[in-house]
Image (tube, rainbow, N blue to C red; front, side):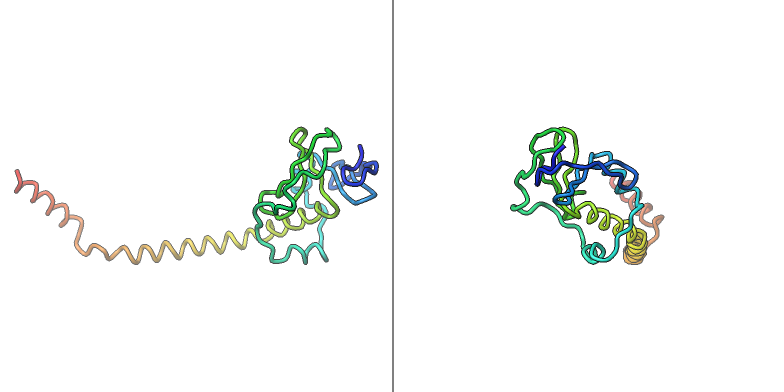
Length: 170
């Protein structure tokens, strides 16, 4: 297979326990859909430095900029035009995906960016879930306090009043 970006011959390497194709010319990588799923779950490689700085404080980014929305590459495996997608719909990392084989072309360092971002989100998730659970608990308590005094009478008095009205109307 040849690189869709610079036409160099792609070389097979082992990465995170799977085989991927890499380009020595431009640094791009071709990864099948199943291999990508394994890579983002494996967490064998940990990234710091520039990748951590890039991911720090980065939240979800939806959509694709117009400049990235056009087909730029053909699949090195199928030779059909690939579609640009925002990986995981909100990562902000635009990769090219083949509609035929599901393979993805990732330009230089996009794979590492995806891994860094997903690992950071996974690491932060327990704290965010705990914070959200506390907010939910606080909201429930506030709601209970605010609605418990809306009806001052007893339920029995209310039901008794309704029954008496029905009997009076009969």
